[in-house]
Image (cartoon, rainbow over all chains, first blue to last red; front, side, top):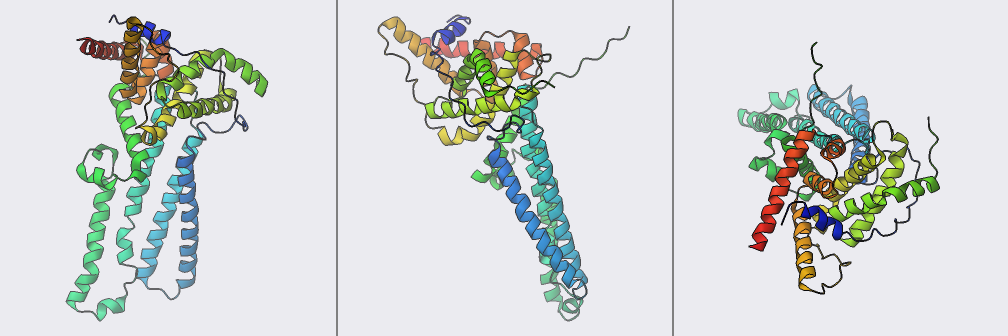
Length: 222
Length: 169
């Protein structure tokens, strides 16, 4: 088959364009782009922000009332935990702001790259979230606990905290786009809930391999 | 600032470009229900993005292609897992009356199958090529260089040619 015949075949096989579907109820025309398609992404982010705000509000209250009586271990652990939670909420809000700035009338590569990057910022939320791990193993420590415990008991206290700190550090360093082909990465993000993230990575890969935008032309010297 | 269009003005403007919407929907959705959903989604996106359209920066058809394809790619990604198993034959095709028509239909199915197997962005490129858009137009819609378009179009055409040659053999 000659190559131009593909275009002929496509044209011949085109069904008659039916009537334009009735317009659905149209909101204000300045609504953010891809608002309906990206609704699940935004809903997840808003739920994350909502739950996060309730959580940090409660923990802040706890800190406020426990401040005079709590041990330094408790204050540092919970303070660190709530600080990380606030950082995660900040990233979620940043993602929502990025989604609002997508202009669907821009070129395909520009829009799809931006959307893929928005989804990939979820990796940052995860990386930072894992930093909380060791703090869950230290908040109940006290000076008295260490003073009155045996060597073995101290080891049982320090061991998990140390292991969790190592794990958190490793995950923080290694959960990134460049490791997407590693087996452990695929196992960690193999569930259906991570499908949008993995799809965003595939798209970004496609963009980087085959659809690099042309760099702006350099002005010629006279 | 230009006054916002009314829904009636928008409908009239849409009539000039509806062929683009149908072709994009046909390329990304084989399932009729999905295709209708996608068409509606494109209409909403066109309506919402219209105030930001600047005729000095892009021709109307280029802009419509961009909105339609961006919507279709995002829509396709969201629905791809849900509908992957359902790829029915196009119901609107009549039964082939003779051998030539039968061969034509087979070729069309091969072409559609080839398009189905392409990755999201390659699908967009393939559609624009089949619609006989110039390399410059394709580059403008996709946001890549003209030379990149030429390379990719010739690679995809070669794959398609080989596919047809294998089937014929």
